[in-house]
Amino acid sequence: MTDARIPARLLFVSAVIAAVLFLPTAGIGIARSGYNPDEWRFAAGLERGFAEVHGRWATHWAHEVLFEQGASIAILVSIIFAALFGVAALIAREAIATTGPAMVVASILTVFLAGSSHVYLTELLHYQTLAPWFCLGLLASVGAMVLIEPTGMRSRSGLILRMAVAAELMAISIGFYQSYVLLGFIIPALVLIRVDRFNHRQCLFCLLRVLIVSGAALVLYQLQRDITIYALNLDANFRFSGGIDAAVFADKLSAFYRIEKLIHSGGLLGVPSFYRRLFLLTSAIACILVFIAAAVAVFAARRLVGGGWMGGLRVLVGGLGAFFILPVLIWFLYPEPYLIGRSIGFVGFIFAGIVLASGTVIVQAADGVSVSRLVRAGVMSLCLVYGVGQAVASSHIWPLFNQMAERDIELADAIVERARTLDAFDVRFTPIRSVGEPWSPSLKFGDFQTQSTFHRGVDMNSIFQVRYGAADYAGSVLTPPQACTGFPADGSVFMVDDTLFVCFENLNPLSVQFTCFPLGGNARGAICYSDGMAVLIGQTCADIDPGTGQIVATQLDEAGRWIRSNQFYWQAKDTEMNGLCYRFVETANLPFSTLRIEHKLAASETAWMIEYDVKDARPLKEIFDTVN
Image 1: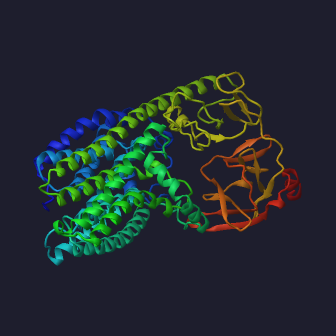
Image 2 (image 1 turned 180 degrees about the horizontal axis):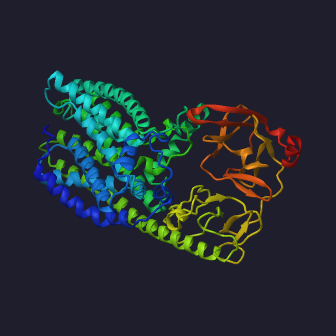
Image 3 (image 1 turned 60 degrees about the vertical axis):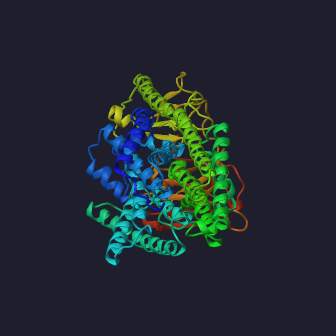
């Protein structure tokens, strides 16, 4: 059968069952998860540069304009559910042949379970006020591609209209969350796989429409982003406006196998080894199923409208391409070396779509043969095992979000209570710096531990603003101005230079710096490397002020290849300690040959740049004596 329409009554039944599965699990998890560091900042009115910094113009309109005063958690959860169910229904519609009501409902529910319960998406859903818009981005991208699928005869004007609407939906999807637009390409991938439904000519013209619509969407996205920035009087300072470094790209290519294994095992989130093996096993079976479907397309060509060798190639390109390329593509497009699990929270939908489509090809080729029932049962069982595994893993993660949020509140209250006994402390005006990070071994699931707002390196801690009306956010430093013990021990909370310091570990002050390099331009500071830290040090805070940009230190090897970069962003607070001003970044103690230091301004402009050989390193005192 080629009719992919799903009756409304079946959609309703599927939605009711999906709601029964989603609301008591993920729905309650979202409602009870509490604030993470980003949500504390949003609550304080900070870091809301969705359009002008991240280019997410649609999220900006939703988060900052339509729901400027916030929305109830019930509304947010409802939007998330509706968007994710819509995605599941559209993918199931493309992946299966509508052979019966039970199969249709079961297919929608398995896609929904595998996609909505994936651990990467669970991490994203913890961002309560952003998750609805990101999920709408998923729905917009999938809906866009469904509009241009090759089904039936259409008038030329109708096709042009569909393509125009699809381009706008893709532009909106990019405007919500750039990486989530990639899920939409699962639809043309399913068209490639479904050799039982689409012939080669239909497939070719579908791919051409995808290319045209994608190009138009990029143009519309940039236009609407710029209009948003102009209309709302924002200052553009895009975080990823520069291209990716060739050396970084080469390093990513060399790590392709490793990152693929991490993606499909749940390793990006550090889930326990049992779940990693389970997810890898089900992923391997899914790939085998794609190869079987490709073989069926070749050897049962007479039963399929797009069979033959070309059909087999289509199945392989569509199935393996979607499975291995779509999740990792954003990694190659972004200049940063790491991949964050929540940026590919749609992986579960890809898995279910590929498995169902490959199974459909096998079943349709074996129509009338008793083995087809066995294939259907096997395909549904594979999706069910994968989805249930993800749901069980996520059920361990949701309580961690809630417990960490509650612990952060208790910790903030305890810090303020202790600090009030110190002279000159006023929570509203006294700068606060945390040193190290609190230890919470019980709040872990495998290697996964949700980030505390007091985590080392969280440079914008807004919990004191939201709870106590502090005028500014707290910062984080890697070393204290004096030896200290871990909170709540005596000596863990103290005042130095009118700043409150809170130590979470037993730490000593920064040692004398010998491996330092002067900054360029008119800057009167230096960057030093010591004990896993890159430290900007100035005689005054103005000496190391990046303005609205960032100071970047890039380490290169002997051949000039990129090793690592340390960015000192303007959002991170500088800290005065013992007569000097500091900015800290954690780094690896690995050898390098050349150090390039540059001050990058908004719009990727560079104020100054200077390079040093590693042998040019000098003690900090010598640098400052020379400057003076």
